[in-house]
Length: 207
Image 1 (cartoon, rainbow, N blue to C red):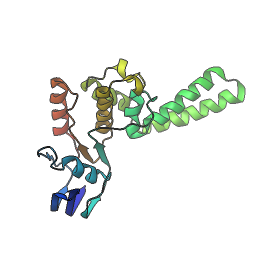
Image 2 (image 1 turned 90 degrees about the horizontal axis):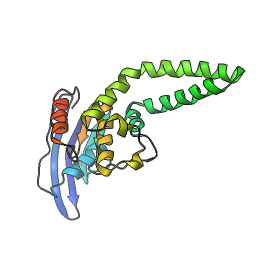
Image 3 (image 1 turned 60 degrees about the vertical axis):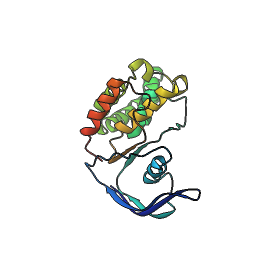
């Protein structure tokens, strides 16, 4: 849930929003509409915790998934698939599983034994977090956003700006956050992906 109380936003001396109070709760579907420069992105950033209003307060409870208009990703050497899976912490578990698979295949004696035990623990943790079903869910979301398996296996730096933005959208949708804040989410989407996104958001359990 997000609660805004008496907030004021400015662009220099110009007041964008003043004395605004509202609440975003589970199940709410809210569209923020206004002309260019009206303060939509500024407000969204503040709601996400990436900015602060000039006046008033914003409180958040639960996980918030935020898709900015111009997403900035960190490590561009990360595979697109791993970037999406990172929303639930699955990327790191899978990376460590792969490392121990390699040690199991190439190690000997105590090294191999230790790798096997570590792999078992990691696989249990992976399954607890949704495991292979979660991987399949992430792939389904990505495919609906025109990100086929071929693209998911590529590092982010090899993808176009539009593809990287779709990876970020897929990551936010896969996060299963309590509230989704999506700034112009249909940018770089074709008609089929837009129709799929509309239906996905209609059925989303959060706000």
